[in-house]
Length: 531
Ligand code: XMP
Image (cartoon, rainbow, N blue to C red):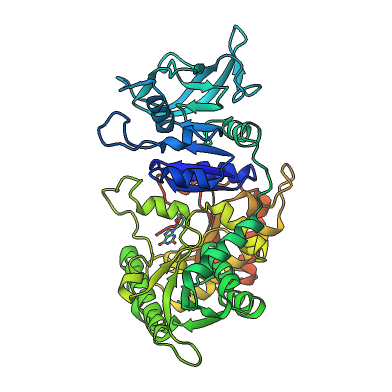
């Protein structure tokens, strides 16, 4: 197993994720653990993460000295490299030039870390690596026993190694995907240099997570707000695996869900997994408050507020305990690692609110409940893998994201029951066709090829003709985008035949809609949702 010591970099979890991708078990611990902790851990190898600090600020973190005395391989990354250099007698200086972004470095010598790993070669046949740099300080003098294993003009000591002691250090970030060979380097380090066994699988994660949840919860009870989305669903399945009936889920149906969504969630969780789920049908409450409101932000605020109200009421009942339940003391949330980074302020606070996102932050304090977040360390794709390993159906786990305010932001302007009903049916047709149509070149369905797709209801009427009669009905817009992070997005180039089929079916099957348009706007300047 691998010990990762965290010096506070934003991307430490990415190191863990890459190690898990090599199927090696790892744990992240803060860099100030004791020497005894490091000795007792029994690591096959140790990785020192990056940090925002600068090594020669007075009070900065150092690795426990035991790291360098255990006779196990050590890999220092960015700050980890600098502290390694400093602690072993080398020198670090403030860079006059910050290096940030892509850089090519030349691999030198024949280090075990980079052997046969390269992106290209230069004129003299030396291997070149495309890497991601983000640093100001740099190592300017090697510690005794080290040699340079990669360099470029800005950073002459871009990587160093003492191959006898198996100490390696890189100034760049192999854990980010921008460093193309990063996974290869980390595989090399953990599997070959450390000799760690690649026997870790998602099933082991379940066993560990279950044990942790049991230890944390004991014989207390837990409430979880189930939305039907991936994160809360996987959290529910995992927690249920750990504590069974000590978990109760609350599923709030605000009347703005996709077609049959409520029944599907209930069938899955209550029916198949035997999880305690309370379904609250709050459609009238939401529709009542939304009546006459057409401003997008006002609608979002109302939906968010009512959601919290309904949830709080149910949670208070559960907290009080009834019928064999002694009362909940924990609130579980499906927070995943990217949410942790976002709320930690890693992203700059935007000056303007483009959209107020629906979330239930702050609830645990208001409710006086302790927080249980078993997915905090995982990335989205790992959460999905975990969901499948827990027995959730793949098509549920690999669904496109669905916003908390639901159809409330896909019905432009005032939300009406009639609009929601039409939209649900049109949207179900669009999604069904995307799922049933394969792209010949890739063999994948268009649902898989798009990151998010949905239908938007436009409350305007246009004239049409059907049979011999005139129609005067509503318009829907189809939206399908391709994106990796949802911050920017391209509209998807869906085949015309597919668009044509969707349009025909919607107009024929959903009486009340006589026109279908396709949204060809990217983000920016448009956003993915229309409101
Ligand atoms: P936009 O429309 O801002 O959407 O380009 C980016 C992504 O965020 C989703 N979205 C939301 N998700 N609560 C959510 O949970 C919200 O209030 C919300 N608003 C937008 C949107 O569906 C897209 O995936």
